[in-house]
Image (cartoon, rainbow, N blue to C red; front, side):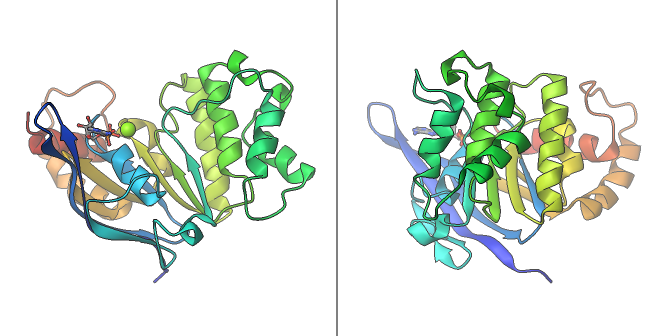
Length: 263
Ligand SMILES: Nc1ncnc2c1ncn2[C@@H]1O[C@H](COP(=O)(O)OP(=O)(O)O)[C@@H](O)[C@H]1O
Ligand SMILES: [Mg+2]
């Protein structure tokens, strides 16, 4: 049994919305363990609460209730972030700076000295080395995503948290990005990434957690979910499904999400 890298216990987050400041739960009583050295996919429809959960894990926002531990430290403790790299949902960078200037700047924010070779390695792994001398505001969405990925892997952190790393990329970009995640997986990193497209990214995962309306509705190893899905999808043979869902696992999880959705 491997160690638990990230532990969420009864985590709730509400936001106050509207004129009267009514409480609205974005995440409800979420308990989840993320194991060391594994890739965990965090799936769920738009608005499920994935980004809110991720922001709490990386310490950008605090839970309204419950607690989050990373490597034994509370998520709000700076020590929790020392071994953690984060790729936000919609990365953006200051205008007028070249890619290399941006990553240099970020390298200085870390707790250890990062030398030029390490910066180049990160840019190369992320596939953006060739564009390091171009101003980042001239980058395409895919290039921006790659620069943000390079920044997130600076200093070789053990834990990587990617929020929708594949969204907005074309099929080739998605394939290349997945290959990078595979490489990081080979380096035994603990990877937690969100996606609203199951078909796109399930092959990366050892384990899958599904969030719908802020609630965790499934959290298991892929092999176990596949077993559950086998019989289920067989019954559903003639079911009308979006074309991108074809394997029993996809059909099963798609249906589960649909059932658990409240409008
Ligand atoms: N700062 C905020 N203020 C109010 N509501 C928010 C805020 N951030 C997120 N929400 C709401 O919380 C819910 C979950 O959002 P989010 O975590 O971004 O979902 P996902 O990443 O799964 O698409 C949504 O209904 C969203 O509108
Ligand atoms: Mg999101």
